[in-house]
Length: 319
Image (spheres, rainbow, N blue to C red):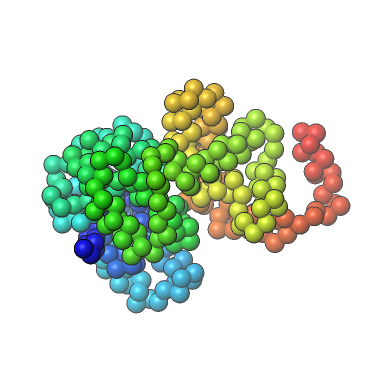
């Protein structure tokens, strides 16, 4: 039997990734409603999507007509019942805090139409942690996207033991329809595939910075030289993921594992970036400044000029 297409989509959470998921889905022909608790969040989302329009025209050869059609498929609201009233699929993209997700699901459950599927975009948590709170465990699974969705177009699909086969099939179809490469995760695993690989690397890089072992530029140079062809290193990746998400992930797992270093890393990010409004690519500044970060500069990986000897020696000697 042909899997039904999920044409009417609601995204809960107008943050960086929620906004990208909404834009990409609308660009690929879906009717999308973006819900957020606050008008301010929706305003930020609309502003970010102005940048996405430019990116899609420049990098994906989108025409002005395609951008206009994308915008015509997008709606924004702070009315949760209205946002989900006609939804075939609801994508939860709220902060990576278990209590927040559970609260959202409990509030959402009475308003969902019977046929609606629900997915979480969590990057590290498990769907089984929240399945019962959704009120529809058989219609619930994970569909995790990466930041810069138009370029890093993976969609990690993870079920929990109670997820229906038809749900997984429909969500897989949706991922393909909006231009994602589905990544099947065969059993529940914190971190899935992507963050099982990336979070330890990001945490290791942050440890080198927190403990004043090396600098972001030299950490990224090391990684990019050893992985020729990569267009960014761990610190650039932290900027792309976003400081808020990185802080939430390190805080959560630092507490879960009683990992003192991971908690120190989270505190460093909060004190040096979040409290100063430097949230990474989204705000134009993190470890690098955007739109022209240092790791994209010509010569970033070249053998340095002899005139840089004193500078490099000064870093070694902390002088």
